[in-house]
Amino acid sequence: MRLTPHQITILKEVGLEVFGPQARLYLFGSRTDDTQRGGDIDLYVTGVHNTVAEMLAGKIRFLVRAKQRLGERRIDLVFAPAEGKTQEPIQRIARETGIAL
Image 1 (tube, rainbow, N blue to C red):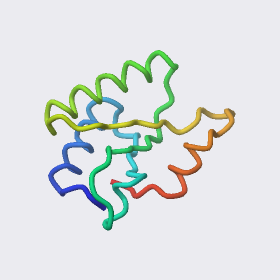
Image 2 (cartoon, rainbow, N blue to C red):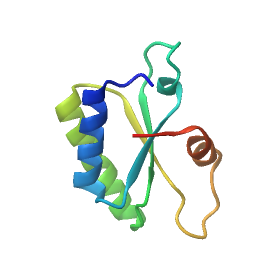
Image 3 (cartoon, rainbow, N blue to C red):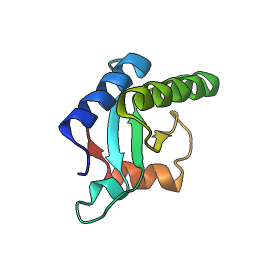
Image 4 (cartoon, helix red, strand yellow):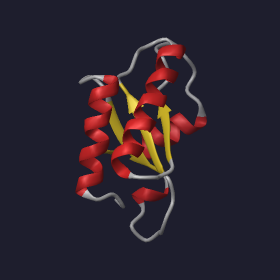
């Protein structure tokens, strides 16, 4: 995993602040591969059951707070599908390959 312990702590703290204690963050994508370089921080978020508008507002708050504390980094958030909704391919990949923070 190509995140420092400090970066992980910040991401978890921001996730708690924005999404609450029930939310879980998983790193997926290129940053899970120690042999690669660069890449954005791809996070899969579970345990958030809000309306689409609330999730969008939370995503914006998360990105602003994380970038304030981490510096300028590309961060992508993918949310787990809502109960009863069809899982998109990116959600399946994130769920299957994600590493819990």
